[in-house]
Every structure is written in structure tokens, then in C-alpha cells.
Length: 348
Image 1 (cartoon, rainbow, N blue to C red):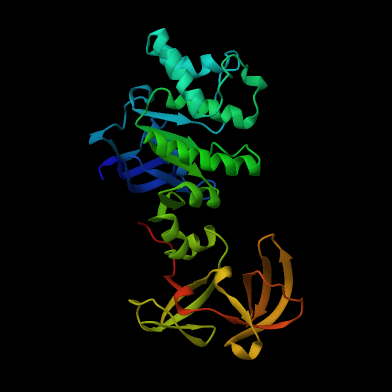
Image 2 (cartoon, one colour):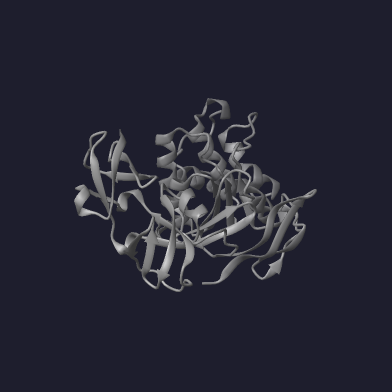
């Protein structure tokens, strides 16, 4: 599938600080791509450069084969939905959505039809005359999206648009946004620090830290095959411990040898080992190479979060079966659930 947007060596400095460092990525047409990472990792700055609100210090932004580094935002086929929505409080819902069309001097009948279509898309029929101040946060967010989409951009940029919503509404809007993207066939580039949001909506996720890409992949790949400890720790909960790769398919964890499915490491290479909490099964102490004592149990609704102290390491286990504080247990996991990673960060 054709590449719609591409960045090559994209770098942004603010004074001596490097906020985005040699970023190389590409986005396909009709793709839902998410930039994910902690605050200050460079994801919003990357989005703003793609949108034209910041200019690169070096490197290129390529849109449909043309470099657009210094093309102003209004001349790009790219619209942005900001975290604060940036709606006009003195205009009603209809005029907010119609604003960009009026700047283009579109005929009034066409404006009316386009606004009506957008209101249907965001499930706000009949809201044309409502004032912005009378709308809930979720309704304002829908209006901001309608205003951005009514101009029929090739790409829609979304900068943490669900951050101000409550949990239930945020989950509903995740599904609605994904549905809109599929229905319209528009490329979405989404910025968030919420891992669940990224896993729920994205076709592809880019994990960033300190201005550098750590990993690019599908939600399943990112979750199941993290390339380093940062990604494993940032995406979901993880048990991360040190290990030594004895040979292909053999790793030593806390001095105990286990079979795994990884290869290609040097013999005796020090590695990071990741095991997800849901992949650990609690057994009787004598039925496992690793045994320990339960020191806390927390009910999480769909599972219990059980903390086990074993061999100077605290393990997190997610289980549908409750355990008692102080109980002695064994920890079992299959070879395919042991993920081996090189130590240190990875610059993709």
C-alpha cells in the first residue's frame, strides 16, 4: 500500500534540547497510526511538525512524494483535532463546523449538506443551533472532530483528544473514532500516553522515548514481542528481570535454566527477560522451579493481582483464582511466554 506520509531524519531542537531525534517513519493511506510514549517523549512535537505548526530543525517531512517542511498548515491536506478542542464559544454548533468551509467560500447549499452529513457521522443530529457552552465534554469533542473532517482532509491528526473525558465515555469514543476512520477511509495519526487507547484503536503503534523511536509494530507485536525493557514496561504490566542467554533457546533466570523460543544471542550474553503477569500460573511450591510467598492480593474485577516474593524478586501474577496472603506457591510459565530482549534502548 502506498506511503502517504514519510519522515526522513526528522529532528527538532529547542535551544540545546533535542526533542525529536532523527525520526524515520512512514504512514500508509487509510492507516490508524498511534504515537505512544510518556510525557516529554516528542510525540506531540512530531505531530505538530507533520501538521505544520512547528518546522523541523533538520530532516524532511514528505507528503504524497513532496517535501512539505515549510508549507503552512492551511495549505496542507492535513487537519488537526487539539486536546483543548479550540472551538469558538461565540458560534453555535453549525457555524463551528461550517467555519473552514466559509473560509473556502463554499456555496451555502453545499455547506448545509456537508454540515448535516458531519452531524450524522458524530451522532449529533439536531444540535445545529446549540451553543458550545451547553455541550458536554464528549459532545464538544465530537464537534471538534466534525469541524476537522468536514474539510475532507487526507490526514487527520489527533493530539490526545480523549484526555479530558471520563473513563466510560473515553472507552466509548475509542470505538467511535475507530469506526469513523474505517467508514471515511482517512488516515489518522493519533497521539496518546494511554496504552489501552493505543492497543484498542491502532493499526500500527510507534513507541517513543526521549525523542527516539523504540519500536514500531502492530498492537499484538508490540505487546507480545517488546524489543526492550522500556517497551515491555510501558505497554501493560510486566515482570522484568535480568537473565543470561546460555545458548539458543536456553536462558538462565536467577540461576535457574529455562527453555525459551529465542535465539541469535551471544553465549553468556546478559539480557532482560519479560514475562507478562497473565502468563504465569500458580502451582504448588514443589511443582515449579521458582517458589515464593504471596504477600498481597488485590481484586481487580476480572482477575486478582497477586504479588509473590520469590528469590529476591517480586512477581506480579494475574489470576482468576484467589490466593491467601502468606501462602507458599510455585510459579510456572511456558517457553513461548518467556520474552528475551537485549539490554539497553533500541533506536529503530
